[in-house]
Length: 114
Image (cartoon, rainbow, N blue to C red; front, side, top):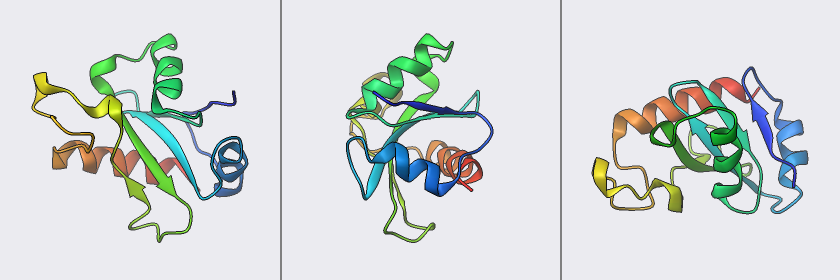
């Protein structure tokens, strides 16, 4: 399984190559909003989540998302993943409810994809 950890940046074409393993028009990813690193790829968000944990990230800082290549950059992030269900921090849904967390996610994701 090809999981790509991005701490600096990745081109859109490189990202599309990673996406081909499971999906073509989108890619799953998880972002550590404290360390500002992203793991892209895998069939499930948990695949990339596991890699970030193994590399020192803390679960409470990791949030799942999808990037859809056929949407505009302003609308291409979907903040939905099973790993986002966290009743202890009032996130009772698969979608990230906290706007501040979504804003951090968006800033990091868009800054890494060039």
